[in-house]
Length: 308
Image (cartoon, rainbow, N blue to C red; front, side, top):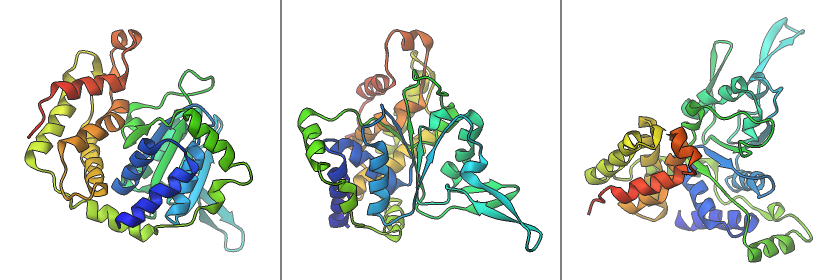
């Protein structure tokens, strides 16, 4: 399985140059069954990354461009009248897929954004009283423009809490940007991407990851970190128990990708910012004094004793 996952990394690195850490975190999210939120400026490769991931696992891929006039039915689907038999038939929406790219999610109204909550948490959708399971694996990769942009709605805390990670790709370095230019001179590298995994492989990996051990002292380390976000004076709203569960799953996936059958404190440190930073809400005084969510998580990590 290691060679197969190495090929997945290779595929993603072909289309997104110079961002190995973001790619590694995306693979962790996929293997742990989590969803990913990418907040970044347009044009840095968020859509291309999602398409490459779907193509690499031979999965279905749907993209939804979120707009202010979009309705929940545009995501979930709706019943269509069939004149032949006089009945209404349910027509599935784009959410019925393996990899769903929710592009510019914060351009849609809160009502429309909420249509994703059940799918992201329970892997099912309920329409007109009927529940429909989603195929596995199912992953939402949502992109959002920085909140200062015109025509955006802030994502509510309940929705942010359902994203396993928030990733920032950022602008590439000078050498990487030059590689991007030449790699797309004649054709798109995405055209040459071949599947290296199947959806069944991903399901098997997700089941194997659940068996990765977490020693009690490491579990207590994670709990202390989560609880510290609720006790810090700079934080108005700390991380939830769901955040703890998500952190543990991501650490198990990180250990699996490192070919270990147990979690170590370094796994927690490597995952903490991406998993927890978007789940805390800062006090206004801290926020307007320039404190960043990620800086708070790093500061708390430095204060908590590490198990040995």
